Image 1 (spheres, one colour):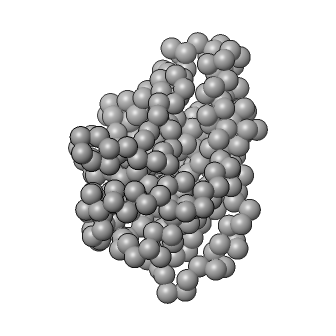
Image 2 (cartoon, rainbow, N blue to C red):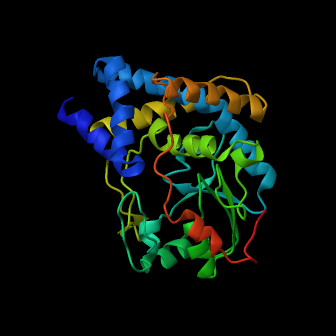
Length: 283
């Protein structure tokens, strides 16, 4: 495996853990012979495979949203590729807000003061619906404690206080966690997770930097697959079952774009839920 493929593996490793990323990228490398063009075509097919479930997730959000839906970037980015969906986007993450991240190793200690100005600039000091992939709600709790008024809706939720799309379809915890984690590798990130802001044309913007070359190629290919998919809308449970078939194939050693298993579960997750404020619920 050459340096480009290793850089892609390292990028996924920061999201999934080194062992799982090596297994995932190794299968893609082997099945394509390391040919970037062939791997990009596979990611286009991955995006098309996700399309029905992303449509169902969008419709679920629209049925639940009490305010204007706002996509939380980077993780909710696959929704942005759906035709006709023009929801606003906000860049928010734990590093910006001083919330530690166990897997990536980020250990910030304080809120970046520009976050407050940035949210005001976007008008998000007013109520909005916070659309994110999930899954524990550490960022949700932190922002709520700072006085922000919003309704969180997750793709998958470990937290019974926060509604999750997959949860309402009846998925079990491990399968839900695996599909949620798979959003990271099925749609590779083309920019870094920003922790700082820059001023551009008089406005605060997240200081995003371009990811490694293969992450950019494969990430754009997967979103292109979603954007150009022509699949008819199918019932949410049927859309989920289609991806669970791919998940089973991945568990058997076939590259499908889905992870063969979930990434390491947050070791302090249950402790976090045990200390969740009893009166803080959206479900």
